[in-house]
Image 1 (cartoon, rainbow, N blue to C red):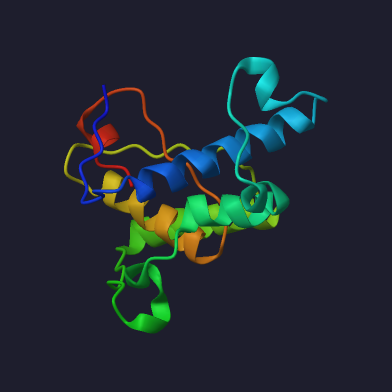
Image 2 (image 1 turned 90 degrees about the horizontal axis):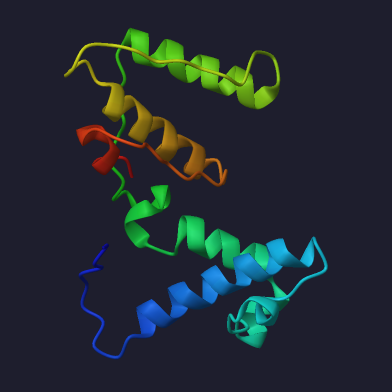
Length: 144
């Protein structure tokens, strides 16, 4: 069970997240000619339904000031040479100039999770939607 701990006495944050998720689900189902109602799900609010791309951007990128590079609140990401090489490979994969399958390995404590979080952060800065997942291990709980 996942428990979201936050200060949200009226449940507005939770309602907004659910609305965004419903809009995303409805957009995916629409590609197959189906609706949320066919699966017993509520419809998203009309405003959310009108602009699914905006809803997805809000879901993935939010509107937090600390994530805005112009606010100066986002910490600088410093990568070592090996990590920068991986980042270059990721950029080449995005541009289609290399394979999009990348395997990163290393002993514990060598900075793999830091690298993955840096890549996720940089991709989100580029407004690329990213979902991190891992099936096991301590690092799985540290991916942002």
